[in-house]
Every structure is written in C-alpha cells, then in structure tokens.
Length: 382
View 1: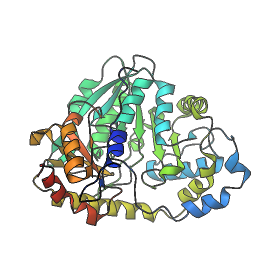
View 2: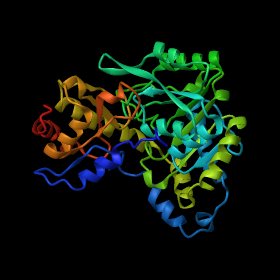
View 3: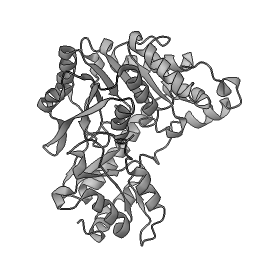
View 4: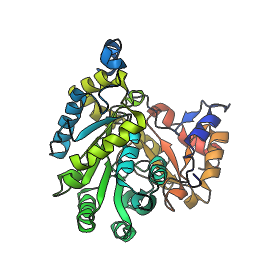
C-alpha cells in the first residue's frame, strides 16, 4: 500500500467544515451536486422500497430489466447492441465498475496508460490490482486541453495491457474529439490493447460539441469495456448504480470480479434506476446547460488567470504553479482567507496534474460562484 495515497478531497472537506469566515464556504472540492434529480428517481424508488426485489441478493449482476435499459441506452450512443444477459453487468457505482474491469484484465506488472491529469481514484485502482500506471499528458492548446497523441504512443510499451480513459475527463473536463479517438483506437488495434472507457460524463458536453464514442470505430466493440454510471449525467450519486458493457469474453470475468467484490448491486436502487433510463432524458441536456453557465461564470470572473477551459464535465483546473504558488499552499490559502474549498491535484496523474488545483462547479449556483474573484483576491491569488 506504500504507493496508494489519498486524493485530498476528504482532507479539504473536513477542513471546510471547521472554517469560520465572512463568507459561507464555497464548496468546490467535491463532486456533489445541487442540480435536480431526474423526475422518476425518488417516487419510483420510494414505491419500490417495500418490494422483495429491493431486499434481495439476486440477481448478482443486476436485474435483467435494468440491464436491458442500459443496453438500449448504449445502443443509441454507440451504435452497438450489447446482449443484456451476457454483455452487461450492474455494479455499485462507476468506480466499482472500474475496479472490476481492472481486476478482471490486469495482472501484476501490467502497465495501464491514463491521461495526465486524471481522477486519482482511477490511478490508485490500477495500483490496487498490481498494475503500473503510465501517463500521457494533456496539453493546453488554444486555452483547452488536447491529448498529446505522440506522448500517448510513446507511453505504450511491451508491458502495456490497456488504456484507461475518460471523456469528458475528470478533473480537467478534457473532451476527446474525433481525431483523438481515432488515434486512440488505431493504437489499440495496432498494439492489441484493451480500452477501458469511463463514459460516466460522456453527455455533459459544452459549446455544442458533437458526441463521439470510441465503440463506433471499426473493431473497437470487441476490445472495449464501457463503464457508465447514474452518478454524473443523471445526478443520482446516492443510488450507487454503475455498469460495465463489453464483449462476453471479458464481461464474464468482470462479472465474477464484481460478485466477489460486492456480491450484488444496490437492491433498493434498481427500480428507480430502470425508470430513469427508460424515461425522458431531456434533463441531461438541461443539466449540461446549467453546468456550462457555471463554468462560464468562473471563466469570466477569473479572466486573466491560468485557468484551462473545460469542454465538458463538472470541474476545471487552475495552474497555480504558473502563478508562482504551490497548489497545496494555494488550497490552504483559499480556504483560510477566501473560504473556498478547492483540492490540489497532487496524485491526480503526473507532472501536469501536480501544477493545478481543481474548482468543482456542480454544487454551487451562479450567484455564489460570482463571488470567486473577491475570495481569490482575499487569498492573494488575484
């Protein structure tokens, strides 16, 4: 466990709970959200709580109705129909799904290539299964993140087994475009690599960006494990519903990793999750539009600072090293003097991540985010 380190969110959150300042604390450290739940989530879940199915171990890999709803969602997004019986499993959230995928495919010493920055929980799950994380940096091009494709290719070596990528990526909000996905898929086919794709935020896109999915590339359905979740796009964090879809030869093993990890998905969440996936999903676009407004409020208010414009997701990064301030010190000063809870990105990748702090804009409304300039000035960061 020597290389398994914390991701800092818990420490910042505990400190934020104790802050007394002239402002209420602006909670930008964690991916909670104040955005409304899908309309079916609470009433259908509540109505199903007393049913036998809500209090059962079975089925271990998720209700067939829920798996069929996931299959329908993915058919629309990927153009590929996954068999709900043999190619879809339901997990206790997307993060369990990621661990199950790694347990089922990565042997000790295998290398897994991730972006830099990337979610520390993914990096450390690679380490938990005995894998070795390698990083391909995102570069800032035109004020936005772009995956360094030359560095990605260079990061793949003889021991590389898989690429593990998100789009939009957390914490940066980087979105892979069609050219980048094509290069990723070419590399997977050329080097016989597995793609573990975390699509938990894939529809939270800004500025009218097109939806691009790697499984639509030729030959990728048979070498891709697709991770999804209700926690981000659907804001159903507490339901803990995630999934993995992919070829039967891989998903069978992922399913056993899931069973011996948690035994069964969350039973009380199954009915509500199914209803939401079968329901009108226009609320996803509404949530994305509100997140874009919040992003724009931060970018406008902090214009001139080395912020990188996210193309989607729930958060953005500030390069405090470019401002001459260590990220951990910036995080402490922001909380102490500006009542802003923000997490330093140490451990969230490699050299690129280590320059930044993260502002999460999913849980704070526009009017409170508009106070950021004054708060950063109080902390000496403006």
